[in-house]
Image 1 (cartoon, rainbow, N blue to C red):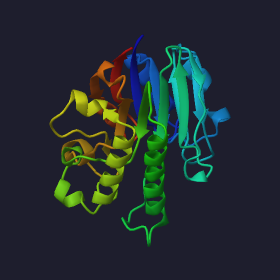
Image 2 (tube, rainbow, N blue to C red; image 1 turned 180 degrees about the vertical axis):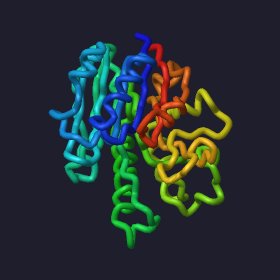
Image 3 (cartoon, rainbow, N blue to C red; image 1 turned 60 degrees about the vertical axis):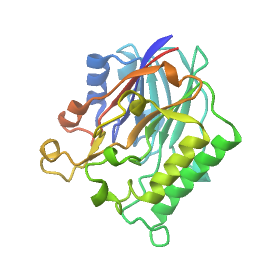
Amino acid sequence: MAFTLVTWNINSVRLRAGLVEKLLTEEAPDVLCLQECKSPVELMPAEAFAALGYTHFVARGQKGYNGVAIISRLPMRDAGHIDWCAKGDARHVAGELENGVVIHNMYVPAGGDVADREVNEKFGHKLDFVAEMRDRFRESLPEKSILVGDLNIAPREDDVWSHKKLLKVVSHTPIEVEAYHEAQEAGKWVDITRQDIPEGQLYSWWSYRAKDWDGADKGRRLDHIWASGDIAAAGHSSRILRAARGWEKPSDHAPVFARFDL
């Protein structure tokens, strides 16, 4: 089975349903994983996506916050979810393809603005969340799995516009980067994007605060596609659809693509 997979923090699936339809129509991926859907599942526009041939839909949602969904034109069964940090947040859903590959769609907490868990509960939540990922992967090594999503950490120096200036900025602090690598290594996950594009600046997010996001190009690579070691060699053709950040009323994230031959 060969399929193209995309991950995209859509920042409200109902507000930006038209952009999702545009992506499905113009790029025709086989599987699209969305984060920050900000909607209960029953109000997500699944019927509109089904009309385009994407008849398989697994999701977890909540009103106004979080929310993850997997939209597929390939047969897929709901493979459940994990309630990370036992907060009841809709931050994970899994779908299993007919070939047995399980796709985990994740939305890691952003962590607030202050990189200090003593004064910022949100930052502590983020660190605890990623630590729980690490511990679960240590307990059960992922096999035949793909993990995608907005992990809200830019791990490499060339995943941010300025390593020096962002060292104290949430998403690129040393403690977050260390936590990211510990989770990745615990599961022996392979970063498919950087497997394909090993060198050079690479971003998937540009702040809404920038007046000229494209010209300033102060981006970060917060969105990731990982594959378990047993199938990582099947991943290829990685790219980021930067142009989507310039669509009308866009998300501040761009879609990240990879193809798998399994």
